[in-house]
Image (cartoon, rainbow, N blue to C red; front, top):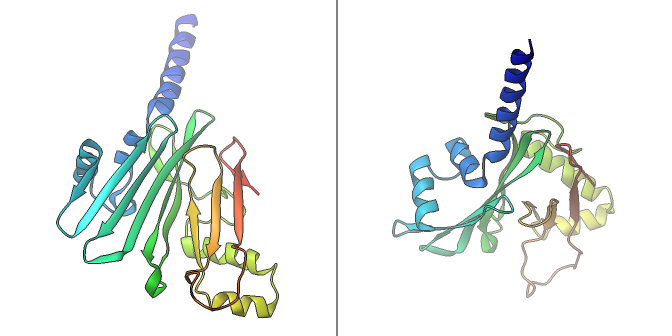
Length: 217
């Protein structure tokens, strides 16, 4: 009986160690291809060489293993105003990892800049998409999450202010932390400072890490 208990305890400790021993690069390799812009072999090449280029598309990767953060900047030679940014980070909790990915970018001149993906995954010896309420407005469906957050931002404005702000082509983006633990959400207009039009402070939310796999404002 004592030996059996020891074996169970050893197995538990090994599982816990496995969950915590995965670094940001390991988790990056585990992500399904549909969420990373690039395939698994390209990921390995990018991590090894720090950048890849095919003549039209250029990608540069930044890795901070200590802080559990990774980002990729993709630019295109044919369009200097277009850029895509992929971010990824994780938080440890309860012998698990909560992983977030955020992809945003586009062309501000054509008002096409915006968030194209934002999801949470749970790593607990395997990787799966989280459908839990990580924060109040979060759903695995990005469009639902965006609508709920924008509705909350607009609840603090008058009808006239909403119409004026919409004329500035605002775009919602989620910035993941390299340092610290909080997520910043901005609903920022895409008009340049030289453009005429009303001025607004950028609606912003700071999601604070609760230490238990969730965030709150």
